[in-house]
Amino acid sequence: MGLSMRALYMISSIGLGHAARARVVASELTRRGFDVEFIASGASGEYLEAWGFNVNKLSRELRSLGDVFYRNYLRRGSGGFSLGVVMEMGRVASRNRVIVEGSIDLDDYDLLIADESWEAMGSNRILSHKIPKAILIDFIAYRARGFSEIIPRILVNRFLTKAFRRFDLRLFIGFREGLRGDKYGFKYIGPIPPVLEKEMLDRDSARRMLGLGDGVYILFSLGGTGAGFETLTKILDAMRILRDWDIDAELVVAPGSRGFLEHLNRLGVKVVGDKHVYKLPTLVRAFDVVVSPSGLSTISLLAISGVPGVVFPLRGHFEQIENSLLVSRYFSNIYSLGEAWSPTDMARTIKRALGAGSAKGYRGVLGDPSMVADLLSQLSFRAL
Image (cartoon, rainbow, N blue to C red):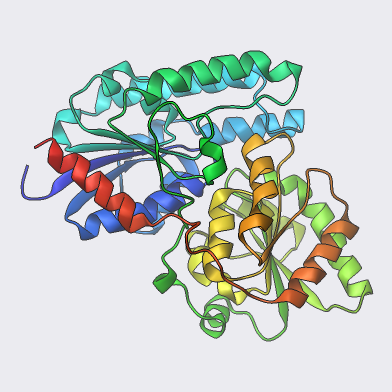
C-alpha cells in the first residue's frame, strides 16, 4: 500500500457546501501525508476536480441528490422534505449505493470519511466494515415544519439515528445550537469555511483576476443547488431600486455550478465566468456585498473574509431558516432576511451593508480544518 495513508472521502451532492469544506479538510490531510480520493457526483465532483483532487471515475455514474432537491424545490416552492421527496431521494441514494458497493474495495483504504453522504450512511456493507469511519454533518435531526412533514421527519430521523451510531468519529460542523439533544456523542467543531484565510486574494488582486474595475459590485450567489435562481428577478428589481436611490452598483451573478452558466448568459446578466466559478471563495474580497441563500458555506466565507453579506433562507429549508436566525448573533458583517422578502427589503438591507463596510469577528465560532484533520489522522492511526 506504500507509505501514504489512503482516505476515501464520500460527499453529499446536495449543494456545493459539502465539497467546499471537504476540499479544505482534504488539503490539511494531504499535508499530513494522506492520499485522498473522493466519491462526489455532479457539481461537487466538478468542484473538487477544479481544485486538482482525485475524484473516482465512478462518481460520473452516480445521480446527484442536488438535482432531486432542485427539481422538487421548483415544483413545490419549498426546500422541506415531503414524503415524495424522501422516497425519491431514497431511490436515488440506493441506486448510487449499489454502484459504490460494487466498485469500491474498502480494504484498499485506511480511512473512510463521509460528509453527509446518504450513500455511506445507508450502506450496511460500508458501516459494518472494519475500516475506521468518520462522519461530518451540520444537523443531527430533521425538524418538521408542518403536518405534511411529520412522516418524513420520522423516516429521516430514524435513518440518521441508525447510521450515526455506527461511525467511530462523529464531528458536528454546524452552529452549536444545532447540537441540542445530541445523544450520539458528536464532537463540536463549528462551521468550516470553504477557503483558508491565506488563500484569499486582497480586493485589488481579486478584481484584476475577475476583470472588474472601480466602482461598487454586488455578488449574487445562486447557491450550489441553484434553487436561489428563482430569486434572481427580485434581486434585479432590488438593483433598480438602489439606482433610484442614487446608489450606482453593478450586479455580478455566481452560478453556483457550471450547469447554470448558459442560462444566465442568455439573460444578459454579468456572471462569474467558467474559469473562476469554482475558485470564487478565494476572490470574494473583490465584492462590496455578497447576497446569497443562507448556507453554512457562504456564511462562514463571509465571516472569514469580512465582506458584508445579506443572506436569506430558501423557503421551507429548515437548516437555512435556523442559520438566518443565528448569523446576526455571531457576525456583525452579515445581515439576514426571512423567507418572505420584497425587492425593497433587499435593496434596503444591501444599502445598510454597504454603509457598514467589512468586519471580522469569527474567532471561536468557525471550525478549524486543521483540528478536523488531526482528529481524522488520530482515528486512522489508532486502527493500525
